[in-house]
Image (cartoon, rainbow, N blue to C red; front, side):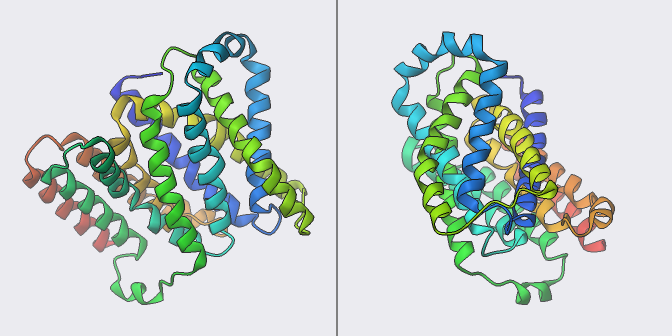
Length: 314
């Protein structure tokens, strides 16, 4: 399940691109796909796809996974059952940009959790790097205009998203306890099944409350994208990257999601293409943060100032 560092960075870039599209798609079809039913069918269909394609290794690996049943249970509960449900729920009350802004706190949450749980030291350079990257994404989200801060508002959906961030932080730390000697698709199948089983009674209650899925061509295409990209591919990429780089370094790439949220909307695809430059700029800031965490913090500050000046020029 481990990969090379270079491959892990590519995996993270693709993962965050998929997950940026996940929230945009979920917000686009929020009226057609109730959050609990949306999350439930996402994992049910994804688990069936894995079962059909990867059945031989799955049969071989299930006894091994059973020996790790409690860590696997909590990994599935936090990362599959809880996080995505909370995110979809939040998107019914708040904006995609607010979700992206709140996700910029994930690297700090991960760093604090590793310090509290595993007693890992937080170096001044690491903290500086996270602060620099977070500020950089904030500048992009407000389009380098402090007046835009006056138009930001927080509501019930934002509180839900804060809870989701902490849940995902726990999930990212728990991945280190996953079984290493099994096929990754076998591991993900078990996680998806755990999430689907936990969501089954909740989505039934939502259905009985009168909420129904409107399965026209648009929502079907949106759900198909969410199953293939953000579910199957993104979770495979993310778990491999976390095992290779660690939760804190991988968590920095959530800043890419926030930056993408600030510039891509389903109502302005042409404008999204025209505004991709800050997306790549943010990727560069994160790369610098990851690669220079063992070097002098001065280099990071100087490069950030240069990047920030480029954002402001826009």
